[in-house]
Length: 250
Ligand code: WAQ
Ligand code: MG
Image (tube, rainbow, N blue to C red; front, side, top):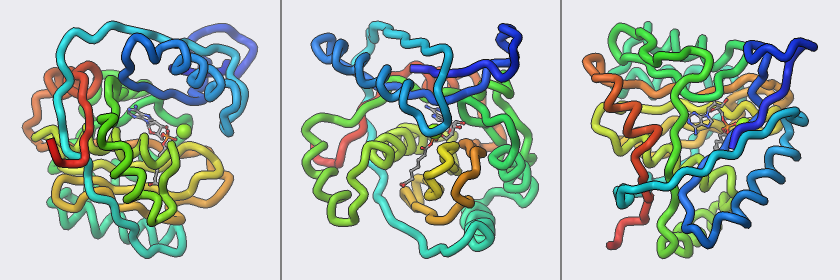
């Protein structure tokens, strides 16, 4: 689902502002209720009322790949300032250069927000996504149904069993599973949602409270990639490879 609104009076696509987006993997029998939920979600978004909602449904041929769910933890962080130092420290410890971190922070504090994620090379800090407004949109992902009860219990004990956390954790797990991905930085673009995260294979999914001030409409996602990553196959994986995230046991 993709919801947008026109910024000015002109109908030109360049004036389209991103409101919200979401994606998933469904059985045919689940489609009608899923489409309803996406429409509801598009129409009631905290970023505002869209004037255009596009829902695309595509048949997926390949059997989904199974990848492990990242372990979840929450960092202690009391302010956006503290969050900034924490982000720099965590990303630097994953081998990401200062320059790449600076470039990434510039993207997530810029306006207007991107619809998708920026790809940043870990050494040079160079941006690698072909379309800098759109970014790369991760799609075709879901949680294995038989993993939901265990995930629900794990998150419930930390009072985190919300759709926003489950969806972010699913996306982060798909992204982290790719060998060229070193880390992900995420800041919600919802004005009321001030917890972000850094995810990586090594460190898991680390939530960062107070990553931005309430009311701030900025946000975004950065995928830090190995310096020599071949971009086309990475984007094919992120955008079109069906992936089901599971809690471990086969
Ligand atoms: N693929 C790539 N980038 C995306 C996608 C996607 N499917 N969806 C969103 N983005 C980018 C886009 O630039 C958005 O502006 C930005 O991420 C933020 O998206 O554990 O709500 O959907 O409590 O606002 C984190 C939860 C929630 C933390 C993140 O992101 C926690 C969130 P939002
Ligand atoms: Mg959002």
